[in-house]
Image 1 (tube, rainbow, N blue to C red):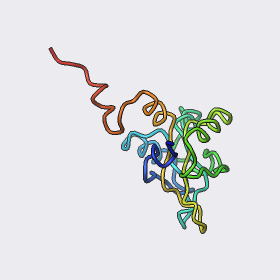
Image 2: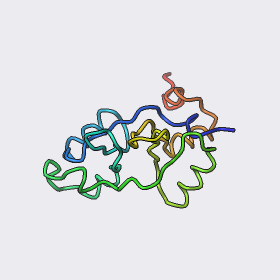
Image 3: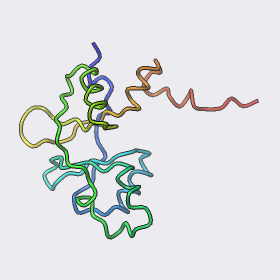
Length: 141
C-alpha cells in the first residue's frame, strides 16, 4: 500500500502571514514551486498561497499585499499515514492541487511535507522520484 508519506516532499517552503506577495513570488521562482505554506510565529500552519492565488493579483503592487490577505485557509488535516487513494479522493472532491501535511503528533500544526498532483501523476507514470529530469531533456544529435 502506498501512503501519503511515500510520495510527499519532506519539508515545506513557508512564509509568515505578514510577508508580502512580491517576496512570495520570489520564493516560488527561486525554489521552482507552485505553493508556499503560510505559518505564524510559532511555525503553525495558517494557510497556503498557490500560483493561482498569486495570478489573481496580476498587475497589482505585490509589495503591498500580505500573505494573510491572499492565502487560502488551512482547514483539512491530511495524515501522512493515509493510503494515497484517500488523499487523491479528497483532492478530486475539493479540487485542490496540493496538500500541506502536518505533524500528526499533537501540539502546534507544523507543516512537515507537501503532496501535489504532480507527485501523484509522476507515481502513476512509473517515473521514479528524482528521475523526472531525465525524461524531460531533449536528446542532442
